[in-house]
Image (tube, rainbow, N blue to C red; front, side):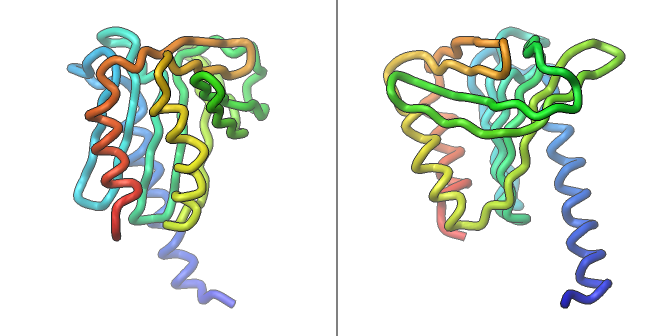
Length: 174
């Protein structure tokens, strides 16, 4: 049985991680179009794709190794899924496909929808995720992103360097 102090500590770390991640999802002024990666000293890496300047990060994949968490967020798609319900996000490239179930919420102020999933993932879990996800990113064609009724082709142009850095942080030694 866990002590209340330990549970409080775990909850505090989780809340801090979620707040830090929420800041990384929206487009930042200066986000470049296409693929980018943000990393920090806490062994966190965020690989993201922006359609055009000042657009939301249409896809963000985050690996928070300091709290054993892996997260995927898609912002700005018109999914056709009701807010507060579950949906499947699918990434595919040729025969490679990665599917994950999460939740869709609608921002009432802007009407934009966000798909979100947080997965508990230690080093073993990250390797299992990577075995399914990396073939999508390392394929030759565009990456097809689907959530509900929304489908979008993401160019792989400019992906190699951000992906390499993401893999180094996300799948490297602790």
